[in-house]
Length: 270
Image 1 (tube, rainbow, N blue to C red):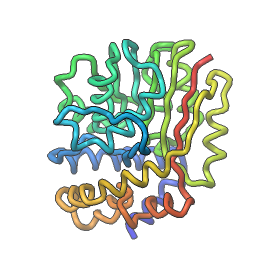
Image 2: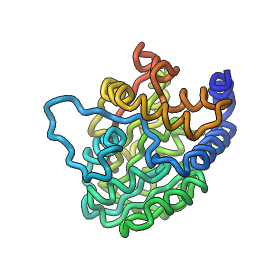
Image 3: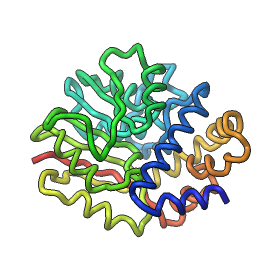
Image 4: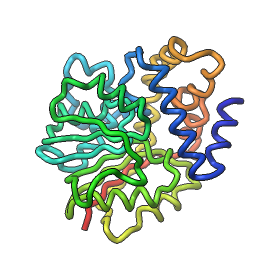
């Protein structure tokens, strides 16, 4: 019941949606502070045939989540560039990109002050990585600052998707790249396409990766259930299960029946 109420409330208005998502992510940052939990995405399991991603031993347990970041980051040039992640959450994705894709600098931006505090603590030893609190719809940067921007499973929280896309275009350098992945209800695809249809950004790649996300959700179901059981009060566990996309949740069932899809897009600034 709590999960259904929460989902209904966030559709009332853009400002209320943004505020409630901020509250929700603040709660996640607080509840999971002591958990072995640096990622918040649904994961990605590559189809057979591609080369296996070689990970360090300490990263192997996070492979499904890292694979989604690796897919997103691998679509664009990153090595030696100035990179921004919008919606960095607990910082695991920015940390992976900093260590494996070798940007000169990567900045992780998140709306939640507690998430930024936690990320800065968890990843403080990585020299080419920093975190800053900020709003995806009003980025705290000058024009034409970044060579590349990534946004992983975050934009569904934003109050105004069009303003977010406009801000991405503003802070990207000419010829810079933007790689985006996120989930949407099938009836919301038109709104997403409209938000992305601005002159400054030219779409160069797109794909539907729902199958790969479902496989990852299957693989990490037990781990997510264990984290929720251990770190989340019982009264709010149903909402966390829905949020996490575990088997039987609304979003998991939506992926399975086709009413929800997971999309990937890459753009270049013209």
